[in-house]
Image (cartoon, rainbow, N blue to C red):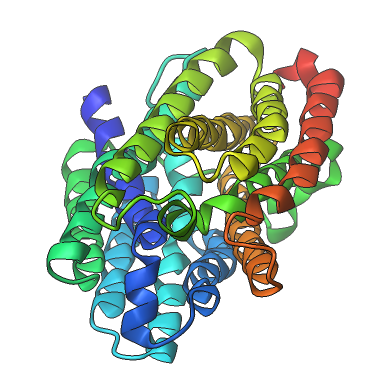
Length: 384
C-alpha cells in the first residue's frame, strides 16, 4: 500500500513535470506556432510560474478538507489547465492557459509532501518526499523527451494532451491507492502563518528562490543554446532531454538519501556550491558537445538536489501550517523560475549571446550557498 500510495502521488508531479519542463524542449516550435520570438516565448514559462504563485495560497481554503480529497481535486485541475493549453490558438490564449495550468502546482506539492511524510516510518520522511518529487524528475527522463519527439513528428500540442491524461490518472490513482489521511486540526488564519515568525522558514524560502534562480537562468534557454551554439539538431533533443531528466532523477533521489543522513540544508548547500563552479564551465564549453552534455547532467542533478530536501525540511519548520509551508516552497521555486526566464531572456535580448544566461546564474549560486550553510549552522541541531 505504501509503495502504491507514493507512486500515486508521484503521478501528479509527473504530470506537472511535463507541463512545466517540456516547454523548454519545444520552445522553438511553440514560438514559431505563436509567431513570437524565443525571448517572448519565455513568457509561457513565466506565466506557469505566476499561476503557481497565485494558486499555492489556496491551501488556506483547502486545509479543512481531507488530504486525499484535496489531491483528487487538484489532479482534476491539472488536467483541465493543460487541456486549455492544448487547444490554445494564439499567444495570449496560451499565456492565460499556462497561468491556469500552474494554479494547482504549489497546492499539490504542499499537500502531497505532507501525505508522503505521513505514509512512512519516522526517519524516512526525506526519502518519501523524494519519491513523490521523483515523479517530476522521471517526467524529464520519459515524458519530456517523448513530448519533444512527438513535437517533431506531429505537434507541440500533444505535450499538453499527455499532461492532461496524467492529470486524470492522478485523480483516479489517488482515489484508489492513497489511504484516507485526516485533515490537519482546525487552526485560525493567524496560526497558519505563525511559523513565519521564525528565521528558519525564511532561510529555506530564500535558499530555494535564489538557488533555483542560479540554474534556471540557463535551463530556461537550454534548448536554443544546445541547438544554436553547441550544434545539436532538433532531432537530437529527444535523447538530450533524456540525459537531462536522468540527471534530475539522480540528483533528487541521491539528495533524499543524503538529507536523511547528513541534514537537508547541508546537502542543498553543497549542490549550490557545485553550481557556482559549473555555470562558467557551461558558458565557456557551450560550443563543445561532450562537455555540454556532461555539465547539463550535473546541473540538472544539482537543481533537484536543492529543492527536494527543502520540500521535506519546511514541513518540520512549519508546525500548524505544514500545507501552507510546503506550498510556499513551490511559490519560491516558480517565482524564481519566472524571474530566471526573464533574466535569461534579458541577457539574450541585450545581445550577450544564447549561452549568456549561464553567467547570469553565477552570483545567485554563491548567495544561495551562503544561505543554505547559514541555515545548517544555525539549525543543524533541529534537523536542518
